[in-house]
Length: 209
Image (cartoon, rainbow, N blue to C red; front, top):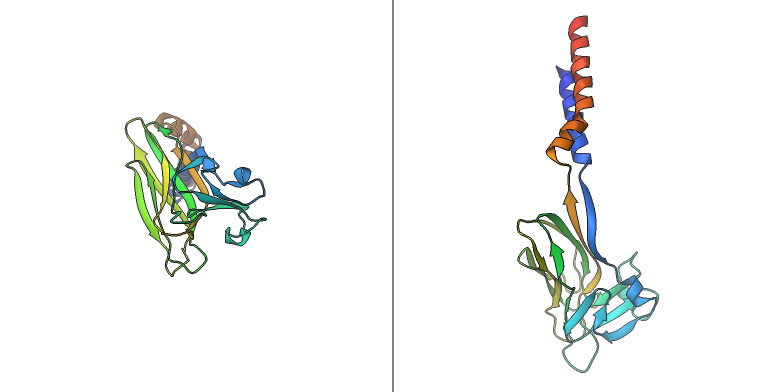
């Protein structure tokens, strides 16, 4: 019986291993930056600043130390100007068919001792305000949320800086992916060899006993 239980457990693991993710939106800002830091822009990769402006920073350019280790580009959500440059950046509307999705993004604090705050939203599925704590620091800096869409819709990914001035939180990557798993009938067919092997092993153990 223990052997059969082990086989069934392995079968369950095989189901889990078939779950996969397909990326439908991603931006790391490296292509947009092109190795150069550009201040006061209204377009950063797949995002558009709908209020104020942002700074598109290359890790190898001016202010590159603001980008997290391992990232080649990032966005300062408070741009450069003469006043309050706290920006809202938004992607285009993303089509969402019924299914399960995971939104992942890396958001770091201002890194300059200023207590930043950023609100992140995706339609009615996600809305979260993230505040630096302590000032200038967000830890952990990688966020991931999984949600279910039951009716086809579309919505943008939006990042809004709540930090007045020209020193904002640092955004370095955004990914939205679907989470898929095989149809029940497919999963069942995939499990048949393991189940058959388990049954055979169980019968042999009974004969030996």
